[in-house]
Amino acid sequence: MSDAVAGLTNSKPLAKITDQSEPELRQWAVENEEKPFRAVQLFQWIYLHRVTDWDEMKNVSKKFLRKVSGHFTLQRIPIVRKQEAPDGTIKILQELNDRHRVESVLLNHGDHYTVCISTQVGCAMGCKFCLTAKMGLKRNLTPGEIVEQVLNAQSLLPEGKTLRNIVYMGMGEPFHNYDNTIHSLKILLNPHGFDFSARRITVSTSGIVPGIERFAGESDLQVNLAISLNGVTQEARQKLMPVSRRYSLEELIETCRRFPVESRKRITFEYILMGGLTDSMASARSLVKLLHGIKAKVNLIPYNEHALLPYKSSEPETARQFQQYLLDHGILATMRVSRGQGISAACGQLATEAPARPAGRDEKSGHPEPY
Ligand code: SF4
Image (cartoon, rainbow, N blue to C red; front, side, top):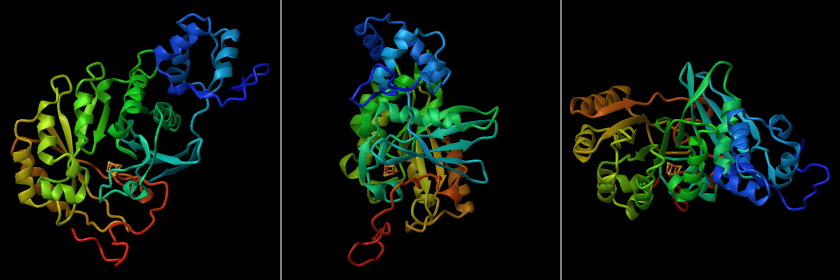
């Protein structure tokens, strides 16, 4: 059965059913003289059985399906390109109704996968090491456009593999699209649908302090929080991350100290190791001091060089020593294995529209920006 069934022609564009929470669908059912449990049935068919056609919803009455298909579309954002790297990383390009495009990345861990999803088309945060920043912000994604990236990723999993983790670390700043991010989390956690474990979902922010404070109050979510840190002093951080001019490093760290981590175990601090910039032993020492007293875990990310960005990777030995220093000083520190480099799917390399000029170049002089 197509979306707009025969006999129910509807000139208005159909609403995305994936934009609806279960309570919203329940309310819609009641308003349309149907039983509230229809919402549970829809969640099961869409997110548990992951059907793509209304006719596949076998235990739902035809009368209800005619109503629902006349109002909502089941169509997901289409995958327009899939690229696979030799290490099994899969980059997924998807096109939205208004022709903007977003990327998600499936990361291969052998027997299971992690999907990295986007919350915005482009990003306004302007992090200097990030290609997405060069696009600027085009628009926020709707909850359904966020959730459908997970459905699309699941449809591409190799036979017998499972999707175990979801990370909100793709294009965009989740807390700049706060309400839709929270709405999408509620859909992913819904026990009648995906039923993802909150422990397996991580939301990463560049450091929007009011967003972190609001997130701390979402006691029914309990998903993990990650902070993209990348600088151990105010001066160093604000050169890489302009958000730090608005929300200082000190304010950010104090907010993290107050964040309720009991049930969420630890806050992850992501720290990109860039050659000669963030990877000195002095930085390692400052990082240990900075995180003192916080239930923290540090995820060290070796920088991925890109022709459009002026930064360098760390030497492997320097990166190893940096990690060892943290470990020796009681900080749980992991080193991220870089994946998907051959297809520009590595951290900070997602961008669906070409930057207007080479990143890191002064528009007039063409010289690298002073760092
Ligand atoms: S690193 Fe994240 S927050 Fe910063 S510009 Fe890129 S997408 Fe935006």
